[in-house]
Image (cartoon, rainbow, N blue to C red; front, top):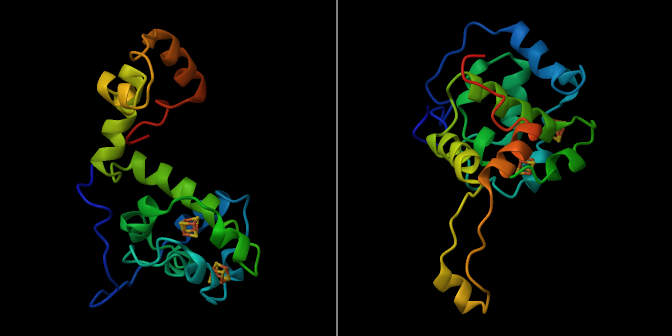
Length: 172
Ligand code: SF4
Ligand code: SF4
């Protein structure tokens, strides 16, 4: 598991001699086989992205990395810091399903053990306890709510099983 939001922080000083066309094909298939060469690097996606000032690698750069079959894209922070707001997808003049690619990249990164530890822990915690966060009675009192209600975690597990929450495994 990765400790940070992506190990690939910059293109500076890096040389990429081998591009993987199979990886380009795999990512294109995430969006129904759309042609990634349609991206002409206008950067309209990045211009509207709400996390553009938080990431090291911008979304239009991610798109170029995909076209070139650069698997290093799985190590970029954009994969995990993307809020899936769909702004880029709405703005793309070429109609590329950019956000949908990012969902797929998250899944691929997870199976390769590249997801941040916090995601892995949160997923397990949600499955084991039915909660991502345990509210306290005093917090509820402040909001004039009653005690934290009891619930049967086995029921929530059944629901989560149906969503396939735990289906994706590392090294699939
Ligand atoms: S908006 Fe579309 S065409 Fe423009 S850089 Fe982004 S993905 Fe490429
Ligand atoms: S979906 Fe992700 S990459 Fe696209 S604009 Fe929103 S945060 Fe940025």
